[in-house]
Length: 181
Image 1 (cartoon, helix red, strand yellow):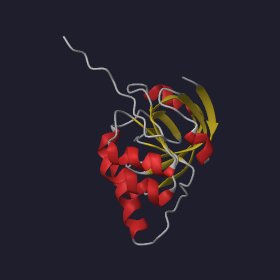
Image 2: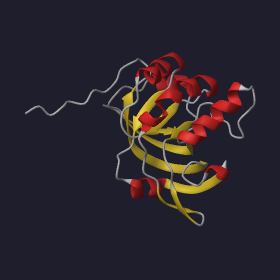
Image 3: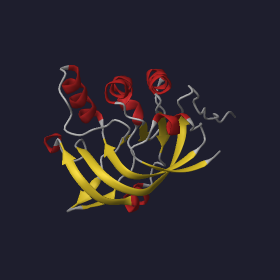
């Protein structure tokens, strides 16, 4: 297990050096994207349109932050498996290098991570206040018409983590041991 402090945007060489179990702290831009944002992004990209934000080399966070005024007060991860049916295509079409969320993702995402040089990292569930402390400012909000939790929040973060790599670009997946009694 290694500890990495990475600045976004991420390059392919850096991401391909990550292994399952590594701990990552991120600084730079972080984009929140949940179900509705994934659907809208894919709808636009499939038509050949551009997104209003650039994801190449960036990191998306499966999160619907709680915002008061201009301050994020909580930003815990949401269940990533909800995005499984869309994630591989989003990786392919955007060049996103990192995904942060909660819980497992499936084989389609694992294959896309391997093919395109990206990694999936888990942020601890229940630690929304910890995540909020790493968010220095909100740069911009896109697709606010989807509602605050589903909008894309472009945030500036500093030492956002710990994010544990649970799916790397080599096709490795961190398997959790099941309790057997």
